Image (cartoon, rainbow, N blue to C red):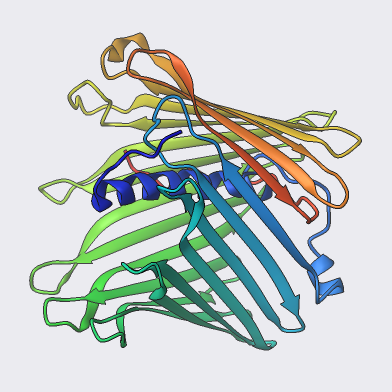
Amino acid sequence: MAVPTVNIYKRSAWICDLLGTLVAISMFFCFHPCLRAQTSDSQTAEEPTKSWTATTNSKSDDLIPERLPVRIIESHSQNGNRRLDKRSVEIRGTAGHFEPYQDIETETLTVDDSTVKTTMRTFARDANGMKALVQVTEEEKHTSPEGDTNVVRITSNPDVNGRLQPVQREIVETKRIGKEVEETNTTVMLTNINGGLAPAFKTRELRKRAANDTVEIEKTTWLPDVNGKWQLSEIRQDVTTQNAQDRKIERRVFRPDEQGKLNQISRVVSQESESTSGEKRSVMETYSIDAPGTTRDGSLHLIERKTVAASSTSTGQQAIEQRVEQTNPGDPGAGLRVSVFIDGRMVPGHPEEQSTVTIRARDSNGNFGIVSVDTTKADRVPTIRIQQMPAEQSK
């Protein structure tokens, strides 16, 4: 496919859009909420020098042909208390060859039983095609003997002279305040008009374990007003109930109106189940006061449903299908219709595993076309776990 001639801004927008999709796809079988094989995660501890690499190639699509082909190369290595993860993104250039676009290196050092340091460096290519550092995030995590944690995360960008300048500081403190209650306080500081760091928002999360394996989480977010005084911005309430084979998660989001009265703006209900044969299924429904194609009437309306079905064979092959149904803005009264379909397959092998993920989506004419076909080869053992939480969204 010929690469269109576009200005750098449009080109970057296409690349960033596609990268967002591919990042999710490339980790599809490793972290997808509806799959996880029975392989052990303890291999890292047992094999401190364990390493693997994975290469993901994405074919061009027939819905958005101006998107550029992308290749993602990931690698992981560990030596004792030091772990190094790398992700390199390449795009096809005008000469038809893959060219470096972005590199992310994450180094994790376990100093001792109570301290872990993590440094993530992001590199891009400058106007001359040379590798240039564009961002550094440094994190230090301390854990007390009681299990309380303190995390300080600082993100810095280089200035015009190449010197790193802090642009964000995040402090996360977690402690147990009761037998079954845990509290997490987070403060995020961003650069202000004076060039320094100032509080941008803060959150307080209470996590309570109740009877019958029920977990209740309430997260409150505050934003500063023009005078720097904290004002309530949002409250999220999650309730998780679980039994032997099923789990239900319900999230409610509340925000204050112009008079300061809290109103519910969204609700997400997720239900997961597993059959006696080992097949796994999850359904997530999102309700919102904002329904596409309609005006607010004060009620919550179903606007999206995600259904995921996963299965595996005795030989280790895994399959996953996901359907996304959404409201049609042109005909909101017609209910939900399928807008995205994802089909994934993973085949284990020696010395490498191979997975393929195909994404199909509905175009403006209502027809389905292939958005991308993503193929990953990796010399690692698949590790895919069942775990789904409501998406971070507030419609």
